Length: 127
Image (cartoon, rainbow, N blue to C red):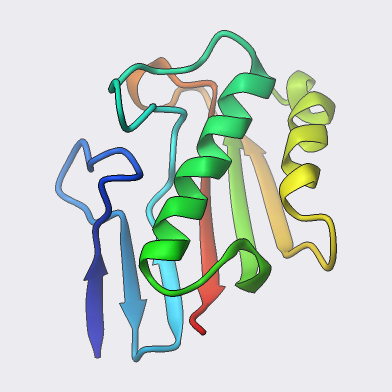
């Protein structure tokens, strides 16, 4: 019923959680992704644009490892430490979801892991 997803193309979990979890072979739930580069382990956080792009590539890697894609994402949740950067984040995010973007929530939080400025999680269909 449950399958854990792990890929070297996204940052390793920094705690007791999985990068993603497939439920009943149909739905993928990803862990929230921050802008960690999986190759270097470096936080790419200099601008919201750079951070958002890295987060989206991390999500894309987990989706692909599970047999899904950005086209199959049905819901995302965006956590930001400064919603004043929302429009700049949205420009980058929109490049990844050109046609039929998923439902989305966006919230401002006081802090994110490792000092990241953005974290995004997704729910996607498999196949």
